[in-house]
Image (tube, rainbow, N blue to C red; front, side, top):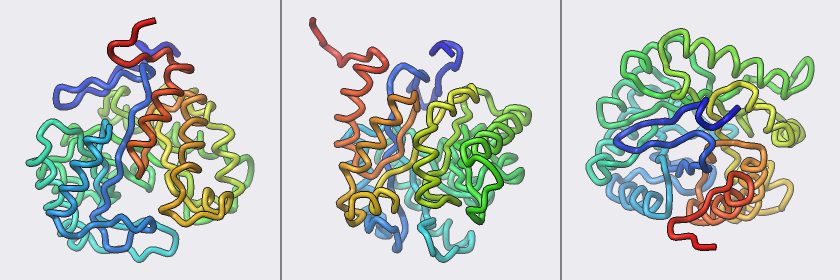
Length: 283
């Protein structure tokens, strides 16, 4: 599918053309229990971190108020809102032109986050109808991630991931989300064993068949840790490998902790795979 056929994400005067280059979603955790140890509950500290992620080269900032690490404890919507809504409001005030995504699966949190300045909603549990209703009403682009409560797949894991995401994406478009505002994520580390994660990574190119924008969130995940023997904060290079693989497969967005490193990886990989060149490039 040609770049022009998938359109662009247009938010706050920014135009992210699908297929033109790889876009970077910088992670900003407003949680005390992030698996990667980078959660910030103090709003002043969080805003400073968001500024740094933006300055490092993020195209989107993804702000979440509930950890979804393995073995996490779910929080109620009031607790999540108390964490994430002031954070989003403060980041919006500090970075008025930044594209902000709220990482939540709770409809009430999504609406409150939108009112505080969030532009998009990123859901780790597909796109439930109640959340989709809020996204349509608020005209928020959606990121739909594959997930399931267990790892007992009846057949090929990539086949199931594609079927799940295809149904959810079609439902979002049918309910009123523009096709160019629908983004799908295969859900590395969610409802999958380490071997299944590797199978999904090997099959990333198949996501393009869905005809919508795609995102990979493999940053610092436990599978990288098992392969490298590294702690979460030491998994930058392992994450960089997944970024390069994603770009070779045609993935549009990578969601990462280490934005500056990812910008370098994406710049080189995009130059080879997408024909991108930096401003001022002279042969």
